[in-house]
Image (cartoon, rainbow, N blue to C red):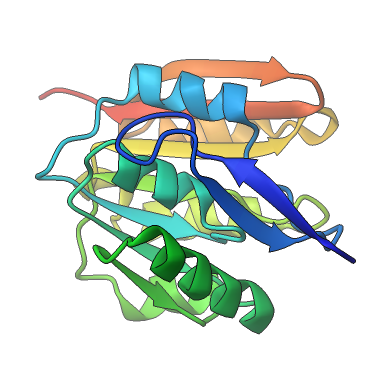
Length: 190
C-alpha cells in the first residue's frame, strides 16, 4: 500500500510531515488528540519520554518538536522501525533512540530507566495495552514517571486500566473522540 502522511501540529517542526506505510495495522494518533495531549502536558527540555508501540513515530516527533529533551521509541515491526529512522533523519531529528524490540521485553529489561512521559499506543486487536499497563505498574515505571498517555478503541474501553493508573496518578483527561478513547494522567503529588 502507498505511503500516507501525517502532519506535526506544534512546535519547531509544526506543519512538517512524517510519511508512514499505509499498512492497515498502523493507526497514528489523530492530530486533534495530539493537540489535546500537548495542551494538557507541557513538555520541556528536561523531560525524557518513552514511546511504546511507536508505529509512525508521530507522538515522539510531536514531543520533540515541542521541546522535549529526548524520546526513546520502541517498535517491534522492522519496517516501521526503519521508516521512523528514515523520516526522523529527513526532519533533522537527532534527540531520540529507537529500539526494534517487543515492547514487553523492553519493559522487562529496562526497569532502571526513568521517564517523565510514557506513551502507550498498543495495537487495538490485542491484549498488549493491558499487559503494558500492568507491567508499567509492576516494575515501578508508573511510580517513577510524571505523565502517562494511552489510547484504546472506544468499544474496547477497559476500566481496569484506570484502576491501575489511579494508584499512582490522577486522571487529567479520560475522553473519547470518534472511535478512540484516550487517557492522560499525572503522578499524584505527595
